[in-house]
Each structure stands twice: as C-alpha cells, then as structure tokens.
Length: 623
Image (cartoon, rainbow, N blue to C red; front, side):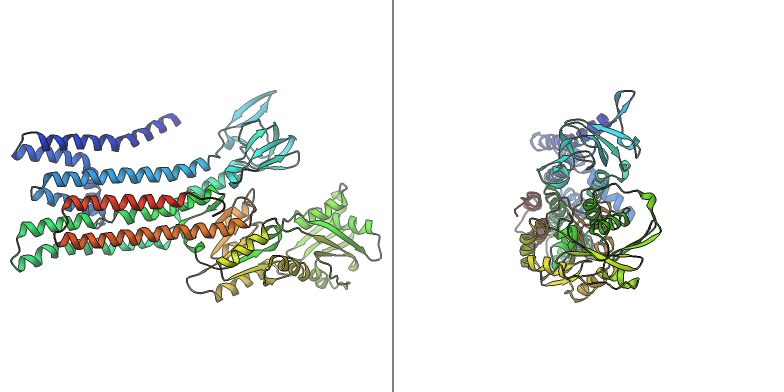
C-alpha cells in the first residue's frame, strides 16, 4: 500500500509537467503550421483545454456552489474573452504560464513540507518484542502498556517507557533540535522518537502509541496549519471584495469609453488584459506559504508552533511571564539544610520522606532522595495532597503534615518561620511543629542571558512562583527580574496573569512560559502559552500553543525573533504584490501593457513572493 501511495505521488508530480509540455507542443503546431480559420482555432483550443481545462472546471464548479469571484473565474473570463476576439495564442499562453507558475508554487510548498517532515521523521515503523526467545517486529500501536520492548543500535525508540535493562546513548535532535546526545540507563524515562545510537536497551512501555510523545508531536505538526491567523483571514476577506471590484472595473473599462465613442475591440482587449493582471495569485499563495515556511523554520530548531495565528501573536509581545520551578530553574531540587525541633534530624527526614511517598513533585522527590532508604507503603494511609500547600498523611496512625507555611496555618500549627534562601518545607507531627527542611534549586545555564535578551524584545518580564518569598526574590535578583510574585497557588497564577492581560495594549500579547506539568490553566489562559521541557510532558503538548523541545530559555526569544521575521516576510509579500498589481492595472487600463506583459507580471510577482516566503525556512539557532 505504501509503495502504491508513493507511485501515485510521483505520478501527480509528473502530470503537471507532461501537461505543460503537451500544451506547448500543440501551441507550437498552431503557431508554425500553415493552418487557418476553423482548423487554427481548433488547434489552439485543444492546447487551451490541455493547459487550462482544470481551471475552467474549477471556475464552473465554484459558480454552481455560489463562490463566483475567485482567481479561477478571473482566469477563465479573461482567456475566453481573448478567444472571442481571436487572440488565440495569448489565451493559450496565459493558461500555460499560469500552470508553470502553479507548478513552481507547488514545488515550493513541497520543499517546505519536506523540510518539516524530514525534521519530523520520528514516526517509528515497528517495535521489537521478545517472544519465545526471539525478537518479533510489531506495529507500535499493537503494543500494550506494560509490555517490554527491545531497542537496538540504530533503531528509533517507538514508545514512551522506562528503561528496565541495558544502557544506551540516544539522539534527541529530531525532537529537540539539539544535537547533544543523551545517555539512558536503568530507571530512566525513554522518549519515543529518539534514535538509539549506541547500545541495546529494554523498555517497559508506559503509554499507548496514540498517547506517546511522538504521536502527539506528529499530530501537532500535522494540525499546525489549521489555526488561521488574521493575515490569512485577511486574504479570504480581501478576495471577496477584490474580485467583484476587478470584474466591475473591467466592465466599466469597456462601457465608459464606448459612451464617449471609443473603439469596442481596443477597450475590450484592455479590459481582458486588466482581468489577467488582476489575478491575486501572489498574495493567495505566498502568504499561507510564508506562515508555513515560518513554522517549518522554527521546527528545525526545536520550536513547535501550533499554527499561524500563534506566529502572529508571538511577533507582538507585551509581557513574557515565567513560571519559576522547572522553567527558569532546573527543577532538580537538593536538600541543603535540616532543622529539627523536639525530634532527631534522622526522624525529621524519615517522616517527611514517608509522607511524600506518593508524590512525584520535584520537592517530594528531593526529600525521598535525601532519605535514601526504601519506604514501606503499608505504614502510610489517608494520603491527602493539598494543591499548592503540601501533603497530610497518617503514618502508623500519627498525622504528619509536610508543606509550606499556608499548610501549617490551615491546620493551626504554630511554627518557627525560617528566612533561609531556598524553598522551606515545614513539618508537623500530630499538629505539633517538629522542624523544617530547606531545599535549593539551581538556575538553568542560559536563564540569565535568555531573560536579558527578552527584556529588549518586550515591555516587561514577570516571574510567578508558589515558593516562599525569599527563594523567589533570590532567583529574581540573580536574573534581573523586577516583577515577581511568590507563594501563589495555581489559581493565583491565573489571577496574576489576568491582571497583566488587562493592562496590555490592544494589539499586543501576553506570553506565559511554564513547564506544562502544573501550569495547564495558565498556559491556556495566556495569549500564547509556551511549554518548556516538551520532552515527555503530556500536559505541555496539550495545553500550550508553542512547545520548546528542549529546556532552553534562549529559545523563547528565538521564537519571538523568528515570528517577527516571518511576519515581516508576509507583509513584504502583501505590499509588494499589491503595489505591482496597482501599477500594472493602471498601465493595463491605459493600454501600456499587453496581455503578454500581464501574464509575465502575474507569474513573475508570484514567483518572487514565493521565493521570499521560503526565506522563513532558513533559521539558525543564533538568530
């Protein structure tokens, strides 16, 4: 079936060239053979139908649907009119050159599609499953959660899971745009779409194929063009006004001179030339292509944009709002201080780790890592995770509270407030304060430089965090962020974002950058939600408008720069095409441009605009 599909695709690519070649051959017969009258008309009309039959058919179908005024209608009326005044060669050449222009446009779109699909060549073909001591190749969507798959050197990881045996070095460049290899060992998460460059690993599958990272990314890229931007909507509205205006202009170009004694054939020919010039091919094709190329260019450097609407919004930033943990910082917390009251330090870390047994929050993971011993889950019951506050559990029948000051206040626990730099986790046993643990997080390597560049690109940079004031202030000072808010619950983050959205100028946008795990409400509320750490983060890919496939803050400013560049290219095309059209329409109406000139003007403008659009494809990480 796959082979048949490729054959069919190749035939489709060859057919325009065959048709153009055949039309030119018949056209040359009509031009050079000594034929006259009906025979001459018949030869040129055959060439005309070979070159433009599909355009006539499209125009007819659209008229039946009630969509009269489009470029097919303009082409048909102009060329049939040329036939009516016996300008056979011009009519045929209009269609041939139009098809040549279309062919080059299709090649250009193909090129930009290929650059995306090559980059996204991450769809796995098969998964190896061990059966009776032998490896059997299965379709990835036939593999179940819990199955163990084997990935050998040179193979793509087909499904998300956890490494249970072996070690390997994987290439994540197709997902992240980064060529740095990543090593996997037992216990590490393996992400679908990466290529195993060295080693053999066994992976226990944690997600079905349709829920895997690779599936979601492919779906995201395939649907990217569905979200139309205002500039693309502008074309639809523009065509509805422009086409009838041009047809009316052509009619008036015949009627008005006739009222003042003009020669019908002269003005009729000018009206037809006017119609040929008016075809808005350059705008209709180059604007969507500009966005498509821009999205392709961004994806080459690991920035996935879900649609052209988001390219437009990204290009006009008012504020960039950051979540702190896992976004500006590494999210790899380390316990740096224990302070116990009334119990030993060993007991403090033990009861804290056991209370956090069921949590996967980075803070909980760091406490469990510091404890470093296996936890017996039978000792723990009645686990209650209180969003933005902490956890409450029963440990061997005793109530343990582990969380922030708000949690302590909520349960009426009086405690010694710490001013330590970092995240302070307070612990209470049977509602009596027994100490606190200080946890520190490291800044990402490029956070400071990334924030510095962003401050030049937008009006303000803001940081929101659920951590304590001193920890947040410490990070804000290191990064040079003046606007920051601490001790926020997820709903408070949405409220703060709403305040920023209210104060922004009408045509500008507020961008929120988060790790996508607990920031889904804020990512969705912002004009543009950018998810960091897209590798393996389901919530990121679901909720965000833009996914940055590695954790680099510098990619946020790069995404803004690329979107600004794409919008510049799109507007260059619109202004260039409309400007040349206006000039040639005036010249055509006054008789300074023949139909030949009109055709070359239209095809030429379109090709220049298409080539300009393709500039958006070529990007560098340092743009």
